[in-house]
Image (cartoon, rainbow, N blue to C red):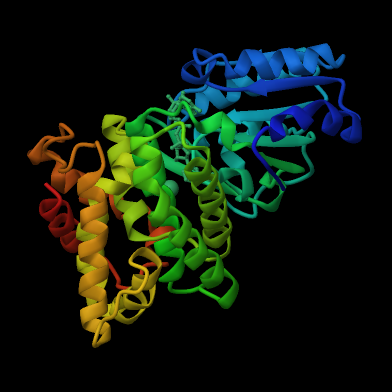
Length: 373
Ligand SMILES: NC(=O)c1ccc[n+]([C@@H]2O[C@H](COP(=O)([O-])OP(=O)(O)OC[C@H]3O[C@@H](n4cnc5c(N)ncnc54)[C@H](O)[C@@H]3O)[C@@H](O)[C@H]2O)c1
Ligand SMILES: [Fe+2]
């Protein structure tokens, strides 16, 4: 991991170290429009590295985009891959790096530990703060029309995660808010993760939450504040490491159908269901939520775990309410009649639901969606 404002200027030297001479730069049209992709491409080309560009990544990347990108990488005969962008571009970059060298089909890779063989050298450069995808062994793909599936295998960890907060100062306020709340959810869900929570993930989650709670609002209101952007990028990365060790749970399980059916961005989907899931979980997770209160309200004191939990949930509600985002499923354009279908879909995310501190059945999932409506 390399973390510094301006760190992306080290890319040519890093390519020399990894012996790379022809890279595939994987990104999306939104980031291409900012000029960031051009300046990184030119930096590499000036240093004698050939660059092929795949700039057609879509949010919540569909399977056919991943396959088309992998075909392009094979045609171009690249010797390494750079993921440049948010979680969508980094997830596609990971899969290209394994698919370009493999005869295994993508559909055989879904699930945990199913990727066989190696991958092309991979450098990840996040431009949102964010998914933490630069440090997770996970790639999320939209399969069919609406379902999201994960490939989880250690090969998806990159050779280098290059974190340069100066690339994030132009991130629009709404994307800053949504991706920042997603990262905070990673920390919260890692801290309450039922099966794999451990002292290491706890430490990462607490530090991540502390950094992001203190800096999210500043980053939203003053996008050019490099210190706030640095703290957000580091916080999101630590949160990624936290949930790579102790996986996320019901907030993500209920968020995924919203992305699948209505293309609501991943962070916004999380923020829409977060307060209602916290309320639902409180009966089982009160003590843990109370432990997290000082991370988001330094110096706060609660007389009991229940009171601490209530204060924690109220503070998270306030943080979501201050974000420049739709606040209810209704505001986000979700038809009320669809809620039972969403609850049925959320049940497909057992990979995530097993990590929730309180078990969730379909009726309860529907109640949570209704509370968030
Ligand atoms: N691999 C993982 O561990 C993991 C974890 C959580 C989520 N995800 C996946 O990540 C995806 C979401 O990623 P995301 O929330 O980062 O959003 P994203 O990658 O879809 O990007 C969101 C938007 O922000 C724009 N953007 C990105 N950086 C910018 C910048 N610096 N300046 C201006 N605009 C910029 C992009 O062009 C895009 O329009 C989803 O597919 C989700 O399922 C993956
Ligand atoms: Fe997420």
